[in-house]
Image (cartoon, rainbow, N blue to C red; front, side, top):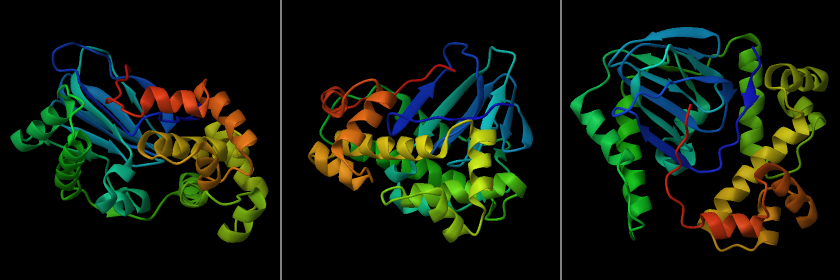
Length: 273
């Protein structure tokens, strides 16, 4: 099965499909965000890495950052869906980026308290003064409740474990110069094996992946800071502003300044599966 690395343009996406049947379906992928589904009605099959989970009404599925996941359904299910950058909840970010759940499935998780938090996060939000702070508080409460019920581990299997180790290292160090030789030295893995994992598992070249991390980081600064484009390019690891502008345009189909004008006062993202 072909897996792809998905670059998320916004820090969070919150969707409530309880009032309309929308198929929960997407190809195998991974990203830096946490992905969470609470199934309200219907049935679905979810995959995290190589593990298959059968979801029924009331069940919750969670994929941690950089964990390969996808869904298979027959359609007609109703659910809550959240895709959230762990940087939004720094109090919990190290847990999400440093471990994975022993099981990505929580049975009968649809408690009134959890549904209330999800309803608050998926309701329309005005561009009010404390909007971002309030949303962050709801996310912190929601994920704290979920983490309390999960058993976590840092043990990862075979190629999936090696790939996750590589990705974890890259996401923590993309701001500095990164090459296959750097990873070979730091992680004690062959550069040829690392290159093979990217091309075979993610179908993306190593340098393109690093640029996608840097552009994603730049998007965050463009939305949430007043740093100049030149300063942002340096902050996220690009050697020159020209290289940054070229990589940004290729990935985002607009210049950094155009992106800033469109997204500095962002609203929650929506995604159809």
